Length: 266
Image 1: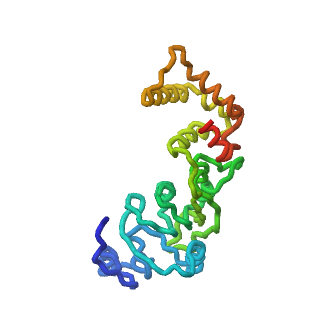
Image 2: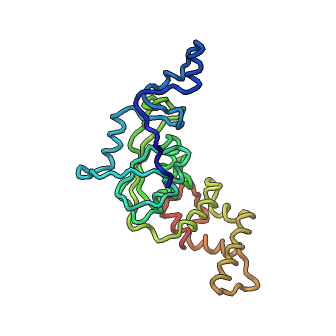
Image 3: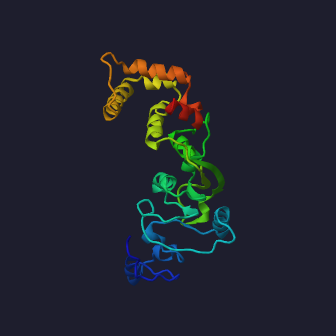
C-alpha cells in the first residue's frame, strides 16, 4: 500500500508555477482562480459540492449506531480488504466494472453498497430482462445481488462539472450466493448476449462457438478422465441440451437470470 503523502493542503488555493509565472509577467490566468476551494487539477477529480446529495448517499447505507471510521490509502480494486458492512463510493468512472465485481467477490459478504456511477453505466447495471439495456453486465451483477436505482445526480452538483451525468445505485448481495461458477455463467453470457436478439440455438450453433465448445468439452473430459466416443458430435450434444432445457428458441434479450441459470446448469 502506498505511503501517505507528507504534503499538507490548505483550503486556500495555491496557484500553480505556471500561473505564478504568468502573473509575474502581468498576465491574467483563469487557472489561478478556477477552483479556489478544491485543487482538482492536480488529481483530475470532479468534487461533489452539494452536501445534500452527499448526505443522502450516506443515509442510504449507514445505521445511526455506526461511528467507527478507518481511512486507508491504496488501490481499492487490488487491495486486501478487511471485513466491512457498508461500502459508499463516489466511484472513479473508469473502474466502475472492476469495482463492482471486486465487491461481489469479497468474502465475507457485506450488507449493502451505495455507489455513484456514470448514468449510462448505472442504467445498464439496473436494467431488467426484455428491456433495451438488458445485457451481460446486468445479468452478471444481478446473479449475485439485488440492484436498484436510488437517484440521479446532475453534473452541476460537481466542481468542476463533468461532461457526463451521474446516478446512485444500491447494491445488496444475495446471501447465500447462487451455487454456480462465475466463469461458467459469464461464458454463457458472452455467447448468448453477443447476439442477444437472435435465438439461443442460433448463438450456440455459430461456427466459432461450436469450435470453442468442442475444445472446452475435450479439455473437461481429459481433466476428469471421461472417455470421448469416436463418433462424438458437439453440435448434436448442444442441440440435445437446448432441446431438453426448452430454451432453444428463446432470446437472451428476454431471458431472466433464473432462465440463464437453468441454461447454464441443465
